Image 1 (spheres, rainbow, N blue to C red):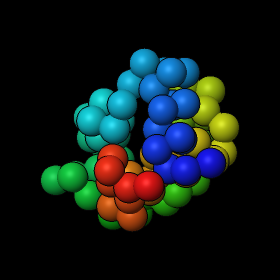
Image 2 (cartoon, helix red, strand yellow):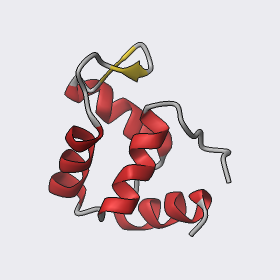
Image 3 (cartoon, rainbow, N blue to C red):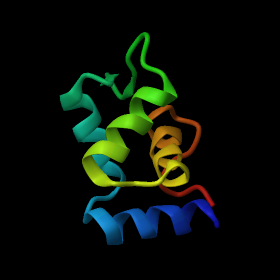
Length: 76
């Protein structure tokens, strides 16, 4: 599945897009100034997204890639 496919499926399932997850992650203290906060691991993000949004591991890792700056919403 392409990265855009992951984002589309996530939006369909949660009603939220990349900007929403950036905002929610900041509210949770996972990010600061648009970057992952010190000590935040992929597992922390994955657990949050699985618990709060019932995302699977691959979809949660896509959001982690966004939050970590590995990918952006225009990535393929």
